[in-house]
Length: 139
Image 1 (cartoon, rainbow, N blue to C red):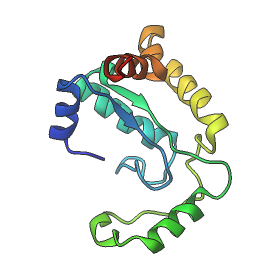
Image 2 (cartoon, helix red, strand yellow; image 1 turned 45 degrees about the horizontal axis):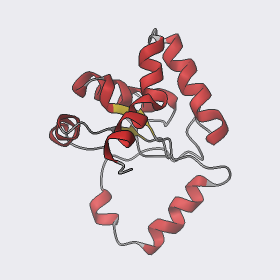
Image 3 (spheres, helix red, strand yellow; image 1 turned 135 degrees about the vertical axis):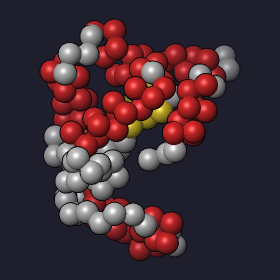
Image 4 (cartoon, rainbow, N blue to C red; image 1 turned 45 degrees about the vertical axis):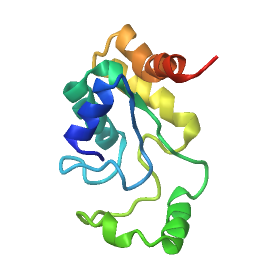
């Protein structure tokens, strides 16, 4: 959900891009109904653009009415004009990433089923985040 230039700048600085999965965010023309497939399409795009060392996941899912919470926030913020884009079918949750308990197991299953190796899975499932945190936290 950022420009290629922004993604490249983050990677060039050693940073990390977290792919989120809150309903109605990471949609694609190929996957216009929000599912794990649309989220993973974003992941693969970013990994191919900047390298697997600069991408991770921050699914941003909740138990309960996640979309209702987003509607409540939106009703109190004046960001509507900046959030214009293609129309989409509203869904109550991201299929395959319904809640925090299912997100990472399903992401890992997806990566395994798409032939990602153990090292790359380790990186995107927390290793990259640990590398960045160790680099920026002052002890």
